[in-house]
Image 1 (cartoon, rainbow, N blue to C red):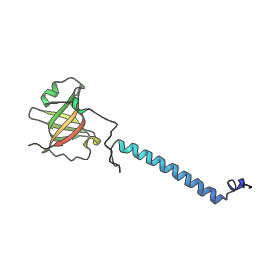
Image 2: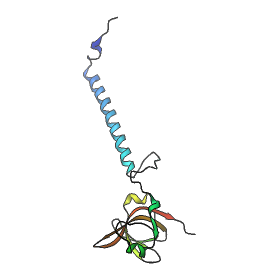
Image 3: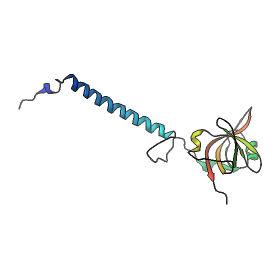
Image 4: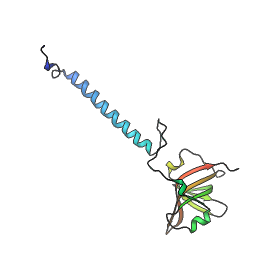
Length: 149
């Protein structure tokens, strides 16, 4: 049986263009899909229900404290605070109040995870004490709206 090898090499310009477009489309689609998965890992829209995060924290390491206690703690101490966010100061900065005092907290947009919090809501904030020349604030890793009984 004689094989015609020229079949694969003799294509019209339209066939070559169509093949090139198909291959390019597949490559572009794969790239966009890979990028979409990476974007979803940082937050935002994802069609998949994923619980894994590249920013994992063991929140059992965070001790429940009052705002007054947190202000006296060392820099980078893990802390959990319970209180009310009473004011948006600017950018990612807010004021959290509990029964003992008020403290500035820094909450990046992705940490809200779609939650809407009002000054009447009680929240738990998990984060680290950040002390610098401007004072003491909490860099928030997680925020959770809670129901108080």
